[in-house]
Length: 369
Image 1 (cartoon, rainbow, N blue to C red):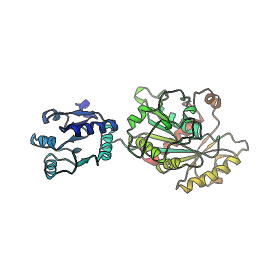
Image 2 (image 1 turned 180 degrees about the horizontal axis):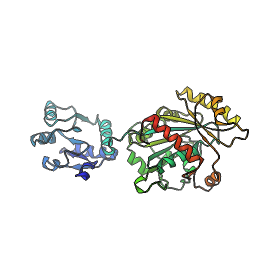
Image 3 (image 1 turned 90 degrees about the horizontal axis):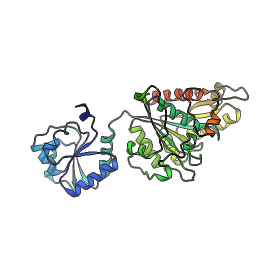
Image 4 (image 1 turned 30 degrees about the horizontal axis):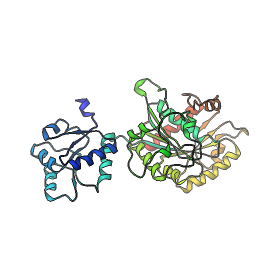
């Protein structure tokens, strides 16, 4: 019984061949597997548990006559304007929606996507920005993603800086198969998270705590080209991860493009990575002003070493921003990055700061940590 209850397949009982072709096409686009029933008797076993039941006019009459119990999530689809008889059948079977195709195709794709993914508790979105070039924002974003995965989280790491050289290089994942931004045609529509992860490079991450704590990492990187994502594409991808209950981490350029601004608008928390020196603090002040113009007040992650002995509190006072974490230098980090192994240490200053930021993120967003 538990296996039936966990089945995420939609139930489809459609007799019109043309309408059935449309429904199956939309289900495939939504990443929703379906169980097809040819009569009410075949539909009955899946009826109570299917996340979505999709009927046509004739099927709704048959299900109503068969006495199938009322339940939420029943949709009747027709071609063109629904005649009065369809509405009568909808009342009899207890349908929540009557939709007309092709006009309601977008709505149906959304409903099928939600049926396939379930109603997960919404995830959380973190934006990471550097105070200047070489501040370590991309490394910190990657470290936060790896830390979250090791703690059992599902993570989507999104590169929003087309001039950054590609976030896959930070993780040593440039040779992994999978799509990058230039390969993905994503508009303003709804993107199924399962399909997105299946298409992206997935660097292996050793989990902490055994197989029951295994997380999942998907990396959507810019390529070594000038073509970056569109604002609509970033919004769709970030919303996909959030909707699926994932932690979405966006690596942003210092001066936000329209695409980066879309990520900032969606972020629950933005952190500004500032090296502990005077020049970086001055640069960080200007970046903070730009972020404020986008309605964002970042928290600071201050990165050592400090050649002049400036501490994190002084950086915070200079920028008039709260300090969330302070990192001392990570031994061997530069060599690890040059050799393609990424910021992968499960312990150390980088992982410690990442864990502090992730804790704050989930506290602010109200998402599970």
